Length: 207
Image (cartoon, rainbow, N blue to C red; front, side):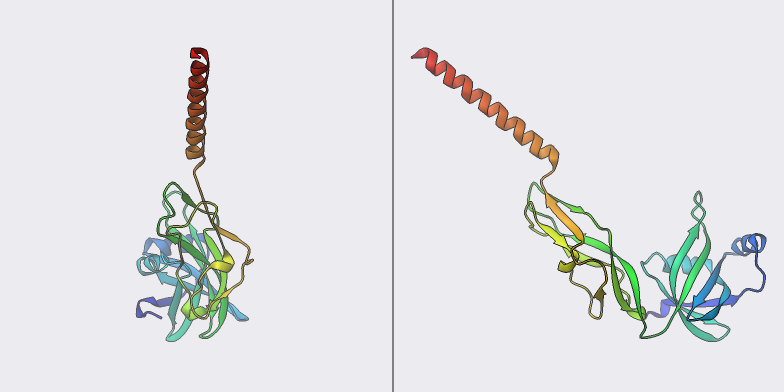
């Protein structure tokens, strides 16, 4: 786990919307840490640092709470719908070596065969992995794949130590020829057929 994920968290003793608003005005984020049967812990996190960290999927924070280190998985982020300012975060206590289930983003690489497109049907996939080694994404190559090719969850190459939780038959990517291209090809074929028929009629009349 990266040293960049170390976050100094302050314990909060005051609650309510007014206090949370004043906290955010100082550049901090109100958060609640819960899990493993412990009482929820109300925290204040450094806003700028945490905002950068949670840009990554399944961000894991190494919290320093009153001198004690605690791993925490970001479970929920509440943002202002207009200004997109983080208003509150829910964090889940995790232990080193513990397995957790998370949705991991699918990243498509490469280009499918000429004239086709690769449609991403599932943008994330549910897997189980060690809490301190969660993958940020899973790459899927569509390089050269032909029309009609399907990639399912069972076809994914998961990172070492990860286990597929989602249905193996879940469709991830379908390669196809765009409908507009098919329609254009049909029009061309119809036009060619009409020309051929006209030429055939002209030839018959000249005989």
